[in-house]
Image 1: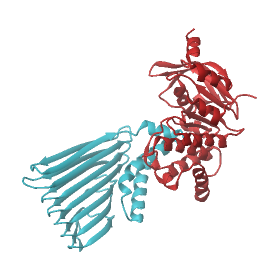
Image 2 (image 1 turned 120 degrees about the vertical axis):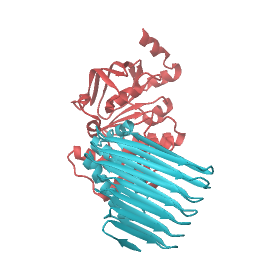
Image 3 (image 1 turned 90 degrees about the vertical axis):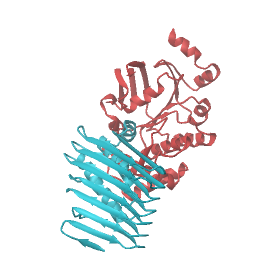
Image 4 (image 1 turned 30 degrees about the vertical axis):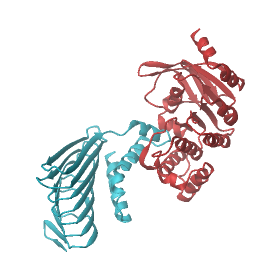
Length: 254
Length: 242
């Protein structure tokens, strides 16, 4: 089976500083992969590049998603192709309610798929069912996007957006950071419910317990200095838990 | 009482009355006198021609204005807070497309003690349009307990769009609280990225953010029909400008 997401020799610069160096990674349909690595190794850069953030300059390599050249698509085309990033720090959008935002987003994706726009009743039903499952009240849906919400609520709203839009490829950038124990469970459950043969995940996290108990990934990648230096299964989590990243750092330098 | 002459509309709100009205077809000049203890909410749409509005407030009178300006002419506003305890709130939304050019000139005169004025102006300037906002607050010598506030915000949406703010505060009294501010800028790129990363195209994202910016004022219109009409007219002008 050919991989859904193929990243080959990717090089990325931010403000003329190289961040990713010859990074290669493949993820198959239905798989959940995790990227771990010390702070500043380029994990968030990778998630931004996958979404098409123009502040990141791709200087080499390619990214294919479902056999299409992702780098040739703009931000919204990638979203409509099924790429979704749950942001580490979601931005506030005053004056736009979450419900309105989701209506635009959902219909944009449906239009790209050649489907009709959802009518009002089906739309409300779709968002209400998902909101309820994630403990999001009607009032939260009416409020402006991310304005005045706590860190945990913002993350929960990111999961909610993911559940509404049902993307094919979900990138979760430190979704569990800053969450209390219960909120981590809600986030983890969100991922569990959404796992399917037709949906892949790339999870960035430092939280080993969260990864082990909630995510249960198929594969772990260790990233150091903008490059994947080790790959493995769950056993890699235990190793990192015990020894940290020092062994990988040495390897990367050598 | 309303009297409309060929070029002027004269309104007198008698003491103690409460009035809400929506003015769409503007005469070149409107003059309103609000008598003691009377309260007025005034919604209006300004399009095309030059227009001036004069409002005089007597003791304890209040006046709350929300206006949508999308005209190619100038708008002059003059508020005379001549009665003690008078309150005047004048909120303006302007949206300019194409080559429209406007000068919004507003003077607030605190001519009596304990008068309060609030002004919030928000504009979106598209394409090659140009807007100048001149806002003045005048507080004469010896007046007490004055509280004035003026804020202006503008979004530049076109390559050649231009907005200018010229605030003018003339304060000759001591017992005064007065604040003003202005900010002119572009759409937030992080917000644009967030919306586009969920599938909205650039134009949708721009329109959504711009109308959200303007609706902060228009959403305060209590009458549903008037609010929705002015919001859709603002949206129409934003889309036209995009």
